Image (tube, rainbow, N blue to C red):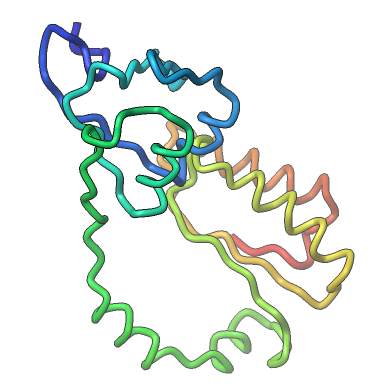
Length: 173
């Protein structure tokens, strides 16, 4: 059954992504013999030949929680073109960007970038924004990402949450 990562019927590397999977791990019952959590399907990583960790932090978390044995962990960092982002940062004009958004030049701007998927927990970012704005009322928030759901329902849910939490005037998509 190829729907089960680490199945004894085949050898396959399992990938662990901190952006989506830490929440799932925290909610799961973990044991060193057999680790299972819900992600649409049950995943049992114990018999996996390798589990790919995308950062040292992820590898350390896998070890700390006893999810897999150390010899099963393969560290393969995400491929990020650091030079590309360095050039973009050098060319970025913060003052112009803030003006284009109609924001004051001295405001605190907090953002999150990522595909708008429920698993990414952008709702947590929005709830955190509601707490932050209570202490720092001049703070503004940006959530950038593509909603790949069939009818754009994820973005609609996030926009609704922004309104419910009273963040409409300081939150941008």
